[in-house]
Length: 267
Image (cartoon, rainbow, N blue to C red; front, side):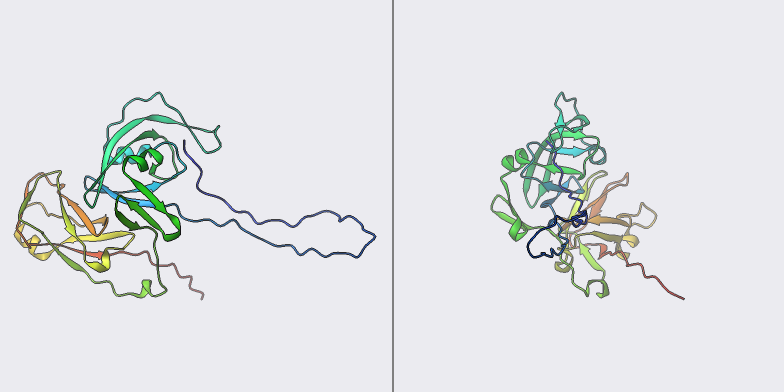
């Protein structure tokens, strides 16, 4: 049921050996190097509780699968299974550890997922035809679009040459309403427009007002890295005490992160 999405290209070699002799004019054949075009698979970002996940959408897969390490991280219950899974060649077996049933959330959509848990997979979550049919998912690769019901989302990242030189400001996120965030629960916050399309981790740290209010108690939210989904982040309460949040309270600061390019210096 699994498929191989990655194609490893090798340089084509010109025909070797001696050419056949001909009584006619000699023809010179120029050697050419060509590579098969490779494109990124469509994916859909969603939440599982407060954890962001990425589902790789594969319209050629006859089943859904999740990598065992991902299932452990999400804390989902794995039950026994008698099914087997093969790779795209139809003969290479994948080691099946069990099966799961769970839900993911995005923009009010509750996405049902049931699939096999396998020991090794090239993506954390593989969403095949059963997932697409159950949740009314379709893809438009030419437009880099995924349709979820009547909603359309773009996938893929687009960077310009000036991205790494941009000034990165810290934005203050406010609580949308008065609430109590219980231990193990989370609060969902809206991201500013310039961080909504960031395909990467966001640095989150408590605002100075939050630190002042929590003097002598557990610091919350603790400095961490989170990933946004559809313009939102979910900040979990990982302390052992409830957190009372007032409406419009300046809760935390968030900014984009990046990996600097390594520069080789010559002496």
